[in-house]
Length: 323
Image (cartoon, rainbow, N blue to C red):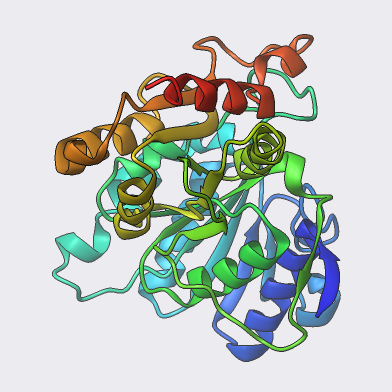
């Protein structure tokens, strides 16, 4: 095993996949000499050249359009959109073209496109550079949505995403880029669509994604000192959702909290709560409690107060323990 930062694990995954398959290339704003907005493509231009590391003008629609066109011609593009907020600029290309091409042509074309993008707060970047929009894209048939929480997961999932013949939206929380963690020296893959039990417990299930996995683990540590044993499930993949792992945990604990950084209304937490209530309400001892951000734009100067944290998760767990 070796210790590596989250952003370095991304760069390592890209390098390994580009070495393995000459059809893999990266495209986006400043992915070449700039090494990507946060360093995810650093060093790739020097190794693979301009043919496979393509800088683009500031046009997100063009980036996704290039990626889709290249994919149907047999290449495997990894497109970088600097901030998840900028996905709004290329929604038509993603939602009406990329997500539907394989379906509309009866499987004649594969669409192996990965769109990497940085989401979330933590940098005081303001309301147009700090949103978590995963739920939007999980709502679109034809797209896979991945949101890794650790260096180990981000590398294994990115490699799997690049090898997938379907489009994958790959959300990387900016607050995690500097995080360190251990990964194997040898190659490994993590299957898309499989959650991970980050902490086993018997009293309450907490299902979380991305940065909120770490907040949930911190809450679980605090609650353990108070005699509450929390099981923490890291979704890793938002769509497809690993229902089996969630259901097995809820069947064991009979209590459920769902935590995500995005605003609480209409989020992935609502879908998971509805899914559990619809299919296994007989196993619940009380209501499902959601943790999420307030329903307002991400404030520049109040971001620390705005973002959900371990105290919010702990409070939600205490609430469900009342039943």
